[in-house]
Image 1: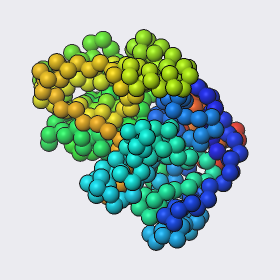
Image 2 (image 1 turned 180 degrees about the vertical axis):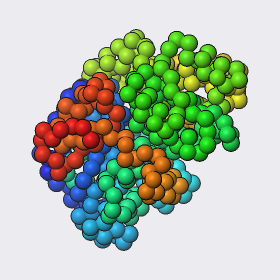
Image 3 (image 1 turned 90 degrees about the horizontal axis):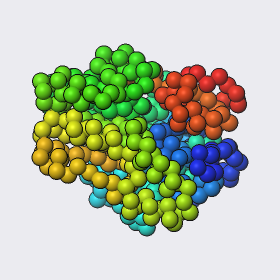
Image 4 (image 1 turned 45 degrees about the horizontal axis):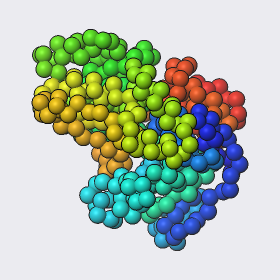
Length: 401
């Protein structure tokens, strides 16, 4: 089959790799109909190369049609249309039973002290072949895949794989009081959904994003948007009775702008030999922390900062005195996808599309065109917000969705 593979820092390529097969009775094989490029994939593209091997298959936001099931899979049948959550969880362990599927004890990667295994995402998370391919082996298919109707475009359902429940969790973790104010830093795909979810739940939403096209998209949902400026914190505090918003969602993570020193450290760590680079990432501060520091400065005293952006440095400095003085709560972590599906599904099924699942994709391309789109997405060129790959499209299909 054709699959998108990691080949080196800022280098991915489409290769022919063996078709996946049933390996365990709880496996399923899914023929991929749509699979997205995630902002987290850009961390592999540029920063986390020391944890990935040449030829590893990328991608963790897939959906498609069930082609084959193992003998222990009774909840799926050949021909079912499914979305595959990015984290691989069993559904019956201590953590899964408590709604912490991202910490699944059955698939935890204990060699790295990490949580549940993820599709297409480094040795730290199991090095499981990902979904930017024609076919995908799905472990624990007796629990993980989400069956969806045969009707509707893929984009109506695809984002249940990651970014929609990730945004939902981010807003739930923000613990905004009824009628309160939520600030969202970053209007990439997760930030877009977090802002829309906040608005849907009745909050005032203030969203910060340096890219005009992303601000314009959020404004369609009556979200107040702001450019990144040196007076940003003072401006938003002034708009919230001099206190700051009740909660802040950081949807940026280590791709934040504004810190060239940390940016250089990220790139330098990625170019070291793997063992040295892993040591640097695990013991040194290599992240760009501008977004999380802004969130801490911005949120009101006694408020909550909810981190959905990914950070990778183990020893990054945090303003502990400010956190303590302002009595700030921080909540974070990989999304527990299956925990939130029952809450989100009625909104996704609603024909009025209240969360705008059908207007997020800006580029739909073939697998052959994916390497170029990684670069476009990373550089935020061509007004790119979300890229979806379609294995059925021929190479060179116009990229606009």
